[in-house]
Amino acid sequence: GSDTKNENVNDNDDESTTSTDTTGTFVLSLASGKEHKTQQEDEAVATYHSSIQKLSLWFIESANDIDVTSDEGGGYWKILYLFRKHSCNNKKGKEEQFKYSLVGYTTLFHFYAPFKKPKAGVVMRICQVVVLPPYQRCGHGKIMLQTVYDVAAGLYDSILNRKNCGDDGTALLLQEVVEVNVEDPAPAFICLRDRIDYECLRDRLPRVDNINKSVSGGSSSTVEDTSTDDNAVDGGNLKTTSSTTEATDSLINVKLITGDIMDPSFFTPLSDNDATRGGVKGRITPRQVQIAYELYKLDALEKLIEEGELEEEKVELLQKRYRLMVKKRLVKLYQEDIGLCKSKTEKQGKLAEYYDQVFDHYLSVLGR
Image (cartoon, rainbow, N blue to C red; front, top):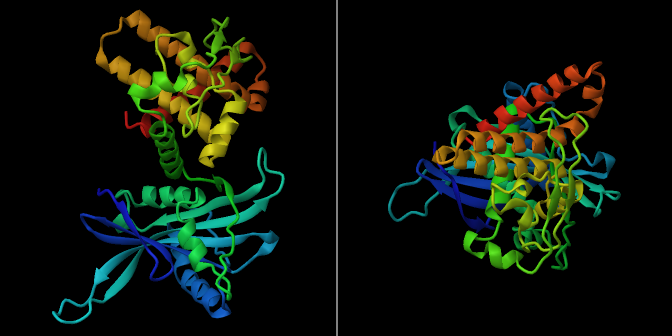
């Protein structure tokens, strides 16, 4: 496969970015279903999307046609298209001309959530992601999803405001996107999303040589773990006091995600409040913050085990601490299903089953 890299922002046509890799040049274009100045522009987007959206039936089991000009329920559609750019004029002395072929697209439904906590705003929902077969497993899906996050974070606001000026030249203010979520994701997309959210968490941490400076002077996390049952279905007796010191850009309090892996506090479960705060910063759901957090901890654990310097007894201890951390979240997530089990043994078995599924998925996401 190939890695596509964002190079520049192209504001000559619709809202777009140009990307180049070893197999050619690719252009990302963000089209609005019902935000143009004229009806003709709206119809042009609707006509084009109607001509290609039948492709989704081949790749998405529950795919349905959408009317991108619809504002039903007060929401609106945008579509992120990915095109491959082809030169069609190689004669010297003539202006170079290009044609574009479809690589894939992502449909995005936007709606205002007035009661969204802790902050009201626009929710951007990813509904369909399609990458055509010749371009699959080349990193294009990752580029589209990362671009969705970048748009939500306001990276392209200056361009979008310029292109959405009123007739008097005044820019129309863009509503703030407070969360990006996904409608009924397929297994492959779940892996992609989890990987990107994990990388977002990892890449926004302070540099290793600056961590001590970033967290010095704050109150430390105190952890008391009296649970010794690896299959505790009541969540154990873990008590956590979160530190008030955190890096400005990190999704999660630095003290909660860094430190000595041999210290029991390294495997402290992430509290709901910390997950919510991380979701606000990253514009992702709190559950995705939890998943990224657990992936980060597992990656650190697996790297330490791979070094081969730990005694088997210590390896088993660290693995148990990790299992307990994840299971405490799963107990709350699957509380109803586990509650239907009649005996403690059955509950423990159900919880172990859920954990094994999560653990295998995490190893796949991390490429282990």
